[in-house]
Each structure stands twice: as C-alpha cells, then as structure tokens.
Image (cartoon, rainbow, N blue to C red; front, side, top):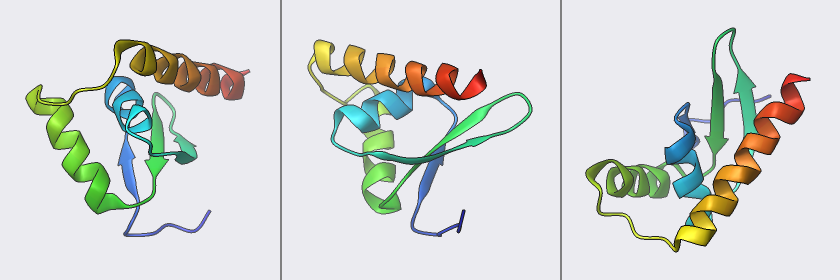
Amino acid sequence: MKTSHRQYRTKDLGEAAYLVSKGNAVVAMERGSHHALFVFEDREICERLAAEYWTGNGVVPAKKFSSSLRELKDLLFARSQ
C-alpha cells in the first residue's frame, strides 16, 4: 500500500468509530504484531474530529456510534482469522 502524508491513522477503536460515525471511511487497516491501525483519508478533517472526540466535545447519535463500532470490530476480527 502506498503511504500518504494526507492520511490519518489511529489504533484507538473508539476514536476510529467516531471518525466513521462522522462520515469518514476506513481506507485501509494496517496490522502490527499487537495492534491494528485504522487508516483514513483527509488528515486535516480527521485531526479536527479526533480533537473533538478526545476533548469530549464530539456529538454523534448513539446508534450511529454503536453501528460504527460494530462495523470496525467485524473488520478487525474478520481479518484476524
């Protein structure tokens, strides 16, 4: 996979679910020996949204967040088998 400086990576599942809930698609998943990185496009937008998430100021419908979390877990566990 070609690495782009415009991409945003996170290993935090909750943060990734928030980014997905806000309309950002996971474009890749990179696996390490003990973790996985979720890769998103548009670093600038993702950094702004990540700041919202980590400061507790982010708002998304609970059902949307839950669905995004489930989608990411499915992606994680499907690729680990």
